[in-house]
Image (cartoon, rainbow, N blue to C red; front, side, top):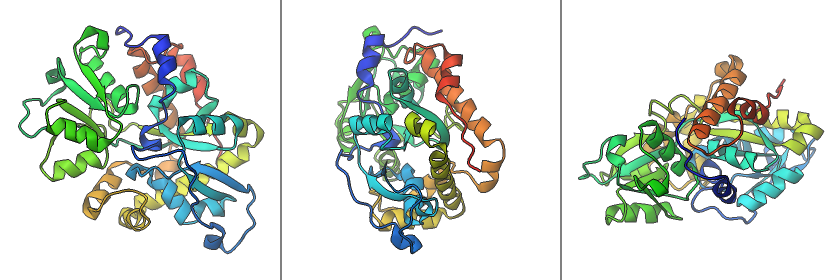
Length: 353
């Protein structure tokens, strides 16, 4: 097992910034934003589960299932009057713990936060990779081995790009522990600032969320040395899961099952209609991307499942990926719990009916 790269104290500090990535973009805020009248989409005001808040105003392209479930009326069909909101970590933590926010989407960087006390469980998988590592076009960096001694830009220390880079480095025998001095991580609160830092030489590598990395790659501004959706270690594994409030799971499991049905309808619709999904996202301004062709390509790459895939060992796939990333994060010190038991503890299979 590789030497741990963060201490327990550091992990506690990191938990205060966990929950970004697919669930909160660089432009996210903590303010609630009214999504609109979902009753208009179904012609009814009779919602079995009433009004709920779901974080979904974050500008991430890979948040497509939330936008589709809302706009196509899948949440309403399942009995929810949904209000899409933007929510920072503290808002999400409070909402999940008290049950006022029943479900959020987030990636495996969420796991250390669960270890440190957020009362949620993984209940489903959402999509595959949406992170790329970029270098300048004239850079001699092309493989993970070339990163030794380099400066890597990330959105935040402890965030998903940082953890992904750490896993990539450690698996190649390069320490991601800053005290070892083999690499340096520098945080940038905005992806555009990170790209500027790459262009002017402040950093050697930029770990970027889609669509920014892909947009600059297509423009010829960067070359991509790592794609989360294609890398051998990460490919075909969920980078983003759905997490349900333990309070809601315990008190009203049918509500969680209904939410998962809405998300799955959306995933299946995106699988069948990626072009229409992108039109919806662009028209409703859910994500900032003007290149429709690129957006369609990216949405297809996120591995949203078909109805057939949902019916064939889907829950086992989710459970296996939880264990896969628990093991990986444990090896590099992001988790201190027994990996096998922790993976069992944080996943709950939900009967969606």
